[in-house]
Image 1 (cartoon, rainbow, N blue to C red):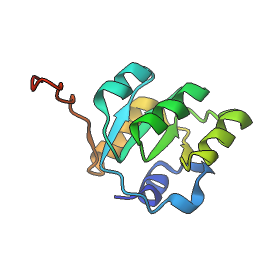
Image 2 (cartoon, rainbow, N blue to C red):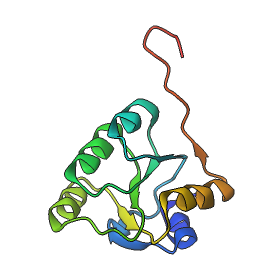
Image 3 (cartoon, helix red, strand yellow):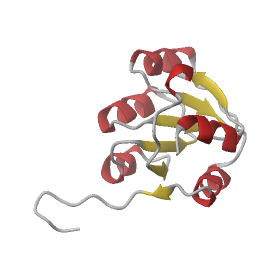
Length: 123
């Protein structure tokens, strides 16, 4: 599935990165805790969150997420949208709640992230 499919499923508004909607979405993470995003995501993960601050963009950039979906119709500040655009990070906004957003994506076949393996081989 790609971001264009996600945008249609969620009836989401494209806030930044409209030219990047062909990106592949492999997994999804629904969280407002950026520490969980750092711990559990991998490349090509879609982040669904209610947060709209710069830390979300920084975290997404550090973890190579494919995009952010902001829930409950929230719109990030211009500063956040500019930072996302500078980092080639699409941000979408949906009126759905975090719970419903994740459920819609799960029903469409996108699965969640599993805990990353530690460097010493334990899970």
